Image (cartoon, rainbow, N blue to C red; front, side, top):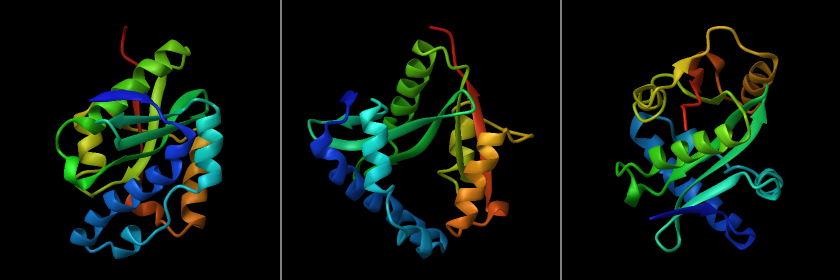
Length: 167
């Protein structure tokens, strides 16, 4: 499976992958998350224009990650793996790719926000070396506020950070 920069003509497909990957939230009583809109196309287009959207392709995309910069760190805006390809290490490979990108750009860490108690969210990321952020930086506080304005309960969310590993 190849990890590569997404092509502009794949962005709508990436939104469909996100929708498909969100369906599993129905199994934990979170249908509102499954029904939520994917990352807006304008945001995806902006991040793509910055070269910060990567896909795992086989040969077509089966998973993707989009990254922004928040407080001088690589911040994962979205990572999605098609449910037919889940639990095969693809998400881990994408996050490791982000780690390498951050290292290349001199960024000290990778951050993300996620659900605290959903098994494939915070517990999964913590197994990958992410740790809770105890004191939010201004940018992460802004991310949390945006999520809250979008309807996500901050008490169910957690900000995580993983230091960029050595080359």
